[in-house]
Amino acid sequence: MTTLLTLTSSRRPDGVTELTAIGEIDMSNTDALATAIESTTGPLVIDLTGVEYLDSAGLSVLFRHADRIELVATPLLAPVLEVSGLAELTTVHGLT
Image 1: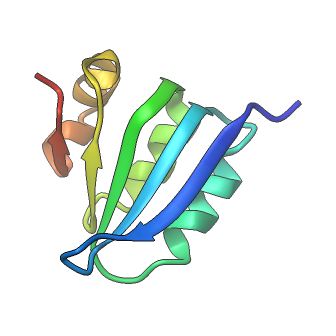
Image 2: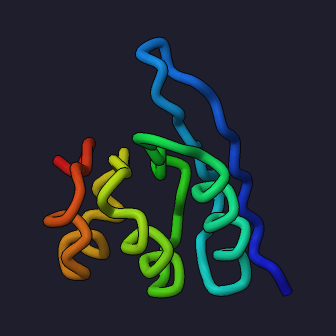
């Protein structure tokens, strides 16, 4: 069974693409996340403020693109992003 995840892409006023994720990111839907990320070019901001759960499969997708993404997250995801080391590889906004 696929876990519910909604992905919406938009263009910010500065021209950077923003991908907003709402729901849970786990191994059942990481293909959709990877496709959404890979369908963009250039810098990408991924808004995870609507994500309630992020597992290692989701982290692996984000790690593959760490050189061109910035994340926006809530303190709920802070432990996962910090312990995994992803917060050291990319800019993460909203953890404090």
